[in-house]
Image 1 (cartoon, rainbow, N blue to C red):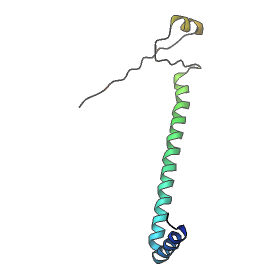
Image 2 (image 1 turned 135 degrees about the vertical axis):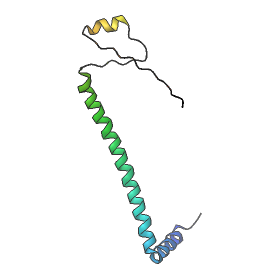
Image 3 (image 1 turned 180 degrees about the horizontal axis):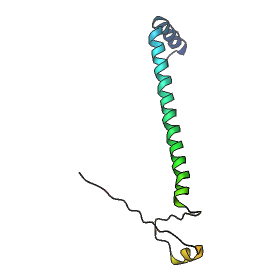
Length: 94
């Protein structure tokens, strides 16, 4: 097992010799982490905004989603006007 004191000593010696390389390394790590956080935050905010606007565009208080068709009993229990939507997966080949 390597001696961590020796590894730390060699790393500090190398960092003192090449301070500009150390600053470049640290700044690139900081910029990379900041970019990942910004992209993740932007994606989450985008999904939230789309969900909020979808509620307004749908004009509905209740949305029922199911992979299988809803039965008549489920539709009759709601007993209001409803808008039906059918989604399907498709592929395009070029």
